[in-house]
Image (tube, rainbow over all chains, first blue to last red; front, side, top):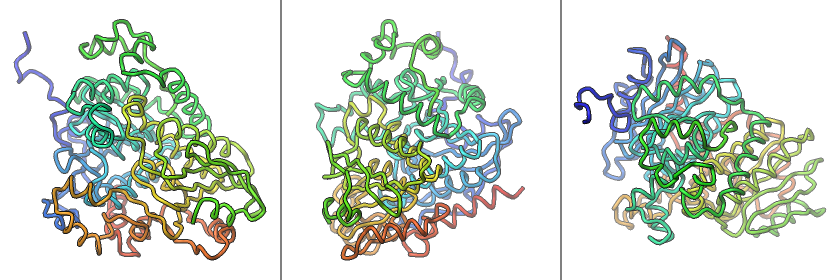
Length: 304
Length: 238
């Protein structure tokens, strides 16, 4: 019997950006910077007859996590798919630049994005690069940057590259991390290459379980703020430095993956090679059972 | 300019740069040292294999203490849009290449990007845009998103987009628009030796990421620097 809805922890996937931050951080600790009252909207969307949002689809600010000061950003996937427009991206860039200077205990990025906003593509693409460079600066300052991926829009396109720049990543089953989305692959190479309507294929190719097992993420969380909070707390103290040693280790890690799994046809082939028993059943495992499995198998992911 | 013309103009005394599977690799004498050259030729798409190979070359250069520059020459497609690449975690491979370039730069190897042909999307972010200073060669045509695709996604008529593109650098394809964004610092003179022009760039490297400021000065990206500054100020206060 399933519990009544009212007794269940609210879903991270279903929550808004503000609700996620409120539930992730210490109670009432969050202060937003340049919030909706500032009315900093996209100057570009009206050209395309599109509605604007007063926060341009991202919430940035400060708060505490277990009494430690953090800076945090949360993308709102329900506005323009959480896409990186000029203003949206600049809020994250500013937050990261502030972090390099102020050195909080961590920076948390709550991803929920389809990538660059097409209507502002040049500004968005450039900004992805600015954000990645800013993350590197924050990491060089000794501050862990932790990404949390579990939103409706996933972390696609430039969002996937930013995720790959973070020192640590938490992902839920619903979290997807990729560069090209299913529709993009299908549009470019046909339905034989990737059937974007095949949800099971999408989840096992780009979803949280696959990323956690193969080292594309460092921790797996159930679809609740509580689980993401616990994982973030664990990871903050285990973030790798950004230096030659880490990058060489990542080179070796990614070379090993390519060597070992480069000819795999599908995700379960990789999981089997990683020693996962009954790899065909991974998708059906509940969060607790999967977490146990992950603890006993899965690939090394110390270097990022 | 073709890749051969560019290499001849960069390295009049010769070089050992070659192209294999669309990936550019080698080195040549430049500004008193020996520049490492990597890149992508012939509009080749960048997948997991290519990104990892280029990153390995960058890390080899980064590990040395010679302070020699790294040149990134780009005429690429987008990222490789295949199921295999995504299954293997293309986002990690592309981010790794970009991080390798950032790392090399912080270790005293100035990174100079040069776009001489096409580039788009993830391949552009992982290579040219991850350098300290990015310049264009006349005729280059970076395209974050072509107008036909924008039309399909936005369901706006192509004619309307073409009209908008004329004075809206924030989304229209082309080198001039990336210059207006501040992401391409300058366009080189194809009729003058590139060696001297790159040496000048190395003598006057930006000390921090000022692309958003350039974009504001040039009127192509008026909001980014202002918004980022407002957030920094808010974070400092209270």
